[in-house]
Amino acid sequence: MDFAELLAALALKVRNQRGAIQTEEATKNAFIMPFISTILGYDVFNPLEVVPEFTADVGVKRGEKVDYAIMRDGEVQILIECKKSSEPLKIEHASQLFRYFAVTNARIAVLTNGETYQFYTDLDAPNRMDEKPFLVLALLDIDETLIPELRKLTKDVFDLDSIISSAEELKYIGQIKRTIAAQFTEPQDEWIRFFTTRVYEGAFTQKVREQFTSLVTKATKQYLNDQVNARLKTALGGSNFSSSDAAAETMSSIPVAQDDLDRDTEIMTTLDELEGYQIVKAIACSEVKPQRVMHRDAKSYFAILLDDNNRKPIARLHFNSKKQKYIGIFDGDKVETRHPIDSLDEIYLHASAIRDTVRIHQG
Image (cartoon, rainbow, N blue to C red; front, side, top):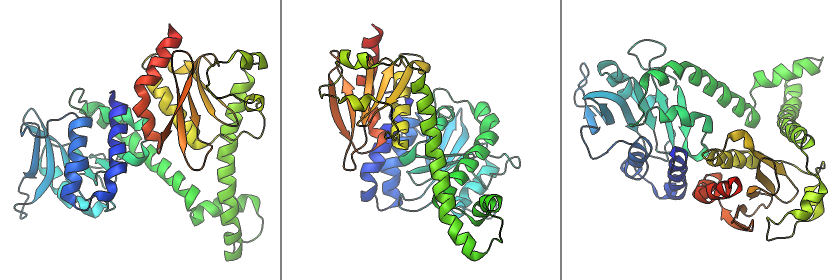
């Protein structure tokens, strides 16, 4: 497995087992130790690499422990403080990290509950841990743009200077993205007021605020959907696809109606489909350049193609059913087999077959 696949496999484990985890110790054993060993690549049973219950007396505080210290060349590089998986992370949980950060050589501190990993450094003041993380990894909703940065902390390619140099940008971009995402679900008064005062000339009263809260929420979501569909229509309009291609198509074991291939306004591309496409694209990029992996949406499925050629199907996403999602995988004869998936992370379980399909099209 490559690095992204290892992350996806651990995410699937967390998703499947989180309901059975009741204590901090269980969280460490089931989720955090596998993260340290499988993802970061350190031997959790080698005290030269990983020290559990790390102690470094700080001032009047004696005998306090940080859950794990990751060592390199005899020096502490990463400190990890753990909480149980059912407990939301708060900065108050990081008191030991704050103290230990100042008296060790560590430049990276991690606060985690096994599902979310918050990475801290000392951007605001030297040798003093920041109050806000520069990187937040949520295993149940992995942001793929963070994967290359996380990889810099692994044992094989440990690159502290590189990650520190990019930490400030990561910190603020991450905070901005999380702030924008929050406005889509629970818009704040400032967000509502910002848009309302630009389209409504009256006073911003409580009644107006209540009225425009739902209007702004709907408008922002519709705008995002419009942008997605506009990009798809632009891409489809520039393709050489014709109805004659459909007659030659043999890639599916299930007959496809002609209207599924029409690019009309009834086709609605979802965020899940686009995220699934990005996962398949990331997998396929080990074999081909990313710009060669294209997509086309239809009424009953979302197709992912090599070179935007419907005779070179890589996969299909069947996400339109409310009950069950499927990913369609193709064999050497272009016959599709559907596999049920419960989350987007499970697409990584079919990475080998996806790569095989890409290689067949290349040959």
